[in-house]
Length: 258
Image (cartoon, rainbow, N blue to C red; front, side, top):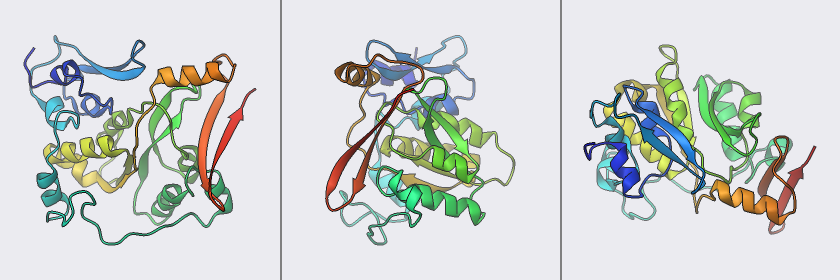
């Protein structure tokens, strides 16, 4: 297999498991699966379907990042400080809705912005992630089109998230529909690179919201945590971790067991 496919990225250990290649592959030659040994998502390339078009490699955020090129294309200029990047101003905020604020990870700002964008007709949907209803320990990226669905996707997800697999839904959406995309740096990077080669995607995504990322725990970390709290994994268990700004930063573990 040629070196211009996602297979070379996986081989070099640079895959972030973002899901971009899966959604953008024109031949549907890539499937994202969970590597049980590593506890992460890994794309598997079907060599019989692949025609070496190179799209998966071009949109991949794992093997390189062109800060100068992306800044010039997105913002029209290079940042004065490469560590901070381009910005208009810096703010601190939170949702004014009590339930949204205190049932979110960090004040519900993104949730509230998305609800506003939906209600004002700025977007028709948002690419977000919730935990699976049938598999609550695995994430489920989807397009939220209602306030209720946006709220359902609130809070951080402390596991690998292949958010960009849902880009396929955006590409297959109705003509004229507009969307927001919420993701970690690897996800947004993959989206921006995809927009460089896919005009339709660029026209449909009108709002990009990036979330600060420190690291991503693997699914193995989830299993370890469950064992540490002496509970076996069950299909009907949900574990959430939220950070709230009260008098000081406190950890608030919400464990709901049926």
